[in-house]
Image (cartoon, rainbow, N blue to C red; front, side):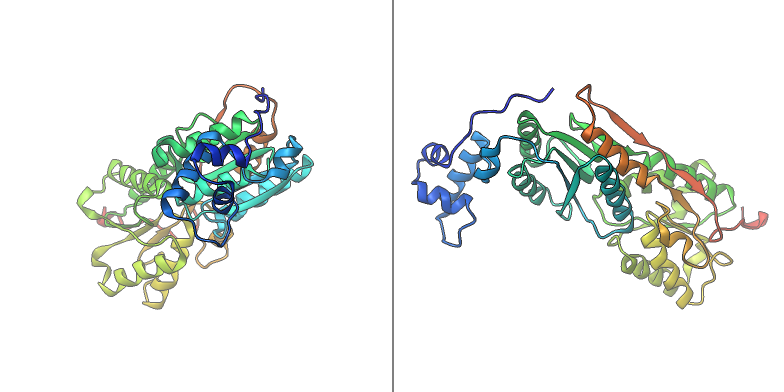
Length: 347
């Protein structure tokens, strides 16, 4: 059940706790253009965090929850996230609520600051969408902020991998990628390049590890698997495939990308280099966004039920109080035109 509303913390309280004037506290927390000495700024911010102060006095005074749901996402421009957000908006609208969206580029400090600002608007629920959200992020400050929001009566839902104690919707990235890697190996491919996206990102890392595991289980030697990192974009996929083609492919007979966006970029680079897909090289993606079937050849990929994940997140956000629920969404291998069997002699 929602916790009872806490006593209102005023700007005077923060100023007193920080040992500064009311004017100084106001400049720090009110986004004033006037400069405040770093030592005073740090004292004010620390006091505000300790007292769980939110800057929007009018929202606090209302002491009620709005009909809004706040979505805080890494990036809302990718095709996969567009599907998730669209499904969230439809599900929220059906329930009489609406969704506000903020992007943080996956930076924990920006996540924390955005969540603080969103809390001042007192949304009914907060949905945090990220590749990986850890309880230890920012020395536990992110978890503390989310707990404070929950204590004030809000609902927190995480979309992505997390160890946080809130409702979550996660994706079985490793298992689905393992199945795709196994399919590629069983199709006779023996030298594989993986376009792995950016280093340190949880979902691409899980998919890469799954690819490798599936390939090796299917008989591909680990030394014949090349992993290349790049920005997660069409341009990133294009650059990697362009380099592979410039090197003459060196016997590479399959390219596996950790999402469809990278695969589409790679497809263009291979085509421009005169490399035929799938006759010369098989190519796969992941997610099954619209791009996967709007290119030639159509991509073999893993279909993730992204719209279902978005709708499920809203269901958890608006549902009745109860035990924390963790939902895991499975992917499905979809074989299309961008892969082909290799000759038995190549196995």
